[in-house]
Length: 122
Image 1 (spheres, rainbow, N blue to C red):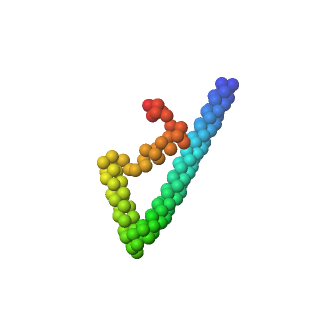
Image 2 (image 1 turned 60 degrees about the vertical axis):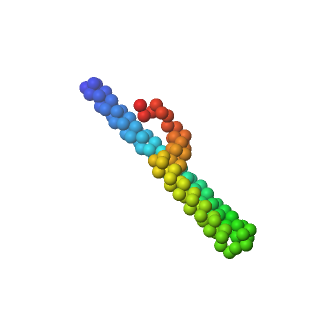
Image 3 (image 1 turned 120 degrees about the vertical axis):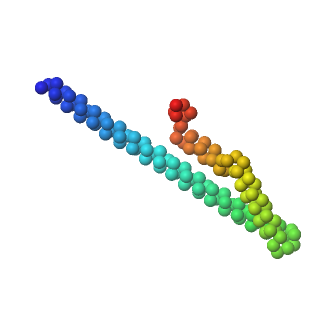
C-alpha cells in the first residue's frame, strides 16, 4: 500500500513539474514575442522620423536651390531627380545582393536582444 502512495506522489509531482515547465515556456515565449514586437515598433518609429527628416530636408534643399538658381521649380526638379536616382541605385543594390536593405542590421539587433549564440542551433 505504501508503494502505491509513493507512486501516486511521484505521478502528482511529475504532473506538477510538467505543468510548471509548460507555464515557464509559455512565459518565455510571451517575453520573446513582446521583445520582438517592441523592436519592430521602435524600428518603424525611428524609420518614420528618418523619412520625415529626409522629406523636410529635401524640401528645404529644393527651396534653397530655387533661390540660388532664381527659378520657381528647378530646385524641386533637381532634388526630385536625385531622389529618384538614389531609389534606382538602392533597387539595383538589392537586386545584386539578393538581400533586402537593412536585413543584416535588423538581424544583428535581434541576435543581441535575444542573446542568440551560433552554437544554439547545433
